[in-house]
Image (cartoon, rainbow, N blue to C red; front, side, top):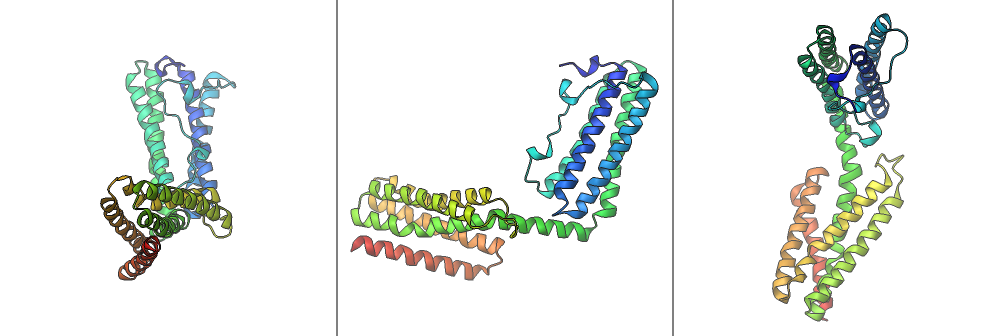
Length: 318
């Protein structure tokens, strides 16, 4: 791997050509990835990719006029200290804000890189070339801002942001909430039934652990197999199943862990407090993301949880 300062002027120009080509392809990848869900932002990236291609053409013309037809293969990853871009398929799924920020960082990083390289150069020709490249990257940032202001209006941005929020709710919040509710409520009866039947905290812990993990596996598979997400827009089954399964385990294990405390009544009191916290968290998520009125969410969740808890205690004492 070579240092940037060791490159000749022709090699610097070849590197600039490779950089422009890579950035243009990344912007094109962004446009394709966003086309279905964010058509306005996809149009912005299509035009940015087209501008990168024009800059690449200008650099190629400059290289051919000075050094001939053959352009050596010099890439970012071959040079020490350069910024290596991650391909789009490495960072999926693509939240819209993350894509916008990544595009801004690409242009800013490239401009800063060329400018710092120009400052370290003592050759007048290379210094001028690197300065010109920095100016081009600065212009890219202005072009991106201009394109975004022209195409991505406040109304279009608001719609895309709202669509992103809906997808987040469908793909993450909803399966997570289903899992948390199942884990927190359905495991109450077996945990407290075992606790009050045996008055042995270790037995109660084992029952709660088995119920939580078993429910998590069951809910995870049920969520993953229930919907492939293509028509509903709920995302990949694997992600939903994983979120649902993990949140189910988390919901059940919360009021199971206190039974590691050897004293029965202390463990039961702590477990009861944890149950209240779990149910309050469920009610808050319903209010925050599902637009459920707060008092209605609290009443329904607390009533259901209290009913299941009472069933477990009654069965355990029978």
